Length: 217
Image (cartoon, rainbow, N blue to C red; front, side, top):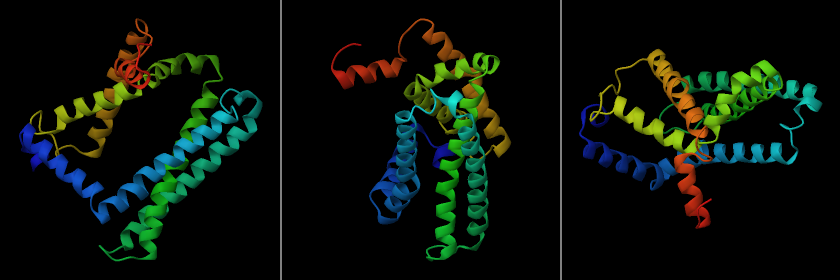
């Protein structure tokens, strides 16, 4: 109710309560660490591993390997997702069980595996000149991740929260997916391309570098 119809200050207070529950209670910290930060840490390590072995730069030499990674990741991701969905039907609130473990594990494994699948697909498509020209705008968006992330927050809170359009809880999955594509491909990608035609860094990425290094890049 607060998110959908509350004033700005009400939403801020509700988010502070959520942060307290997620980071300062045993149940919340358990979920945050196991389903959030552990997954992020794994993806960071996979990216580091790929960079150390120059898998992206040497994609043309490792075509067979990339295809194996692609299809194995897809199979594991779909299988883990199905396991998660099935197990979620057999869990009871606050009751530890094998189904609960399967659900949590399936969720984490599916996220990481499907991420690997998407990356493998993009890397292989980028080897072809036509696809590379179509994918280049995505590279511009990838150079300003912090700006894009926070801009999405601003736009979506204005769309869904009560101090904006108040659509919280009123949109189905189809409209939500359409909004996600519209915001990213219709607004953020063109903005990124336009911005990097004039600047070397994204706006918030520039400020982040100043704060990190103590000097202007």
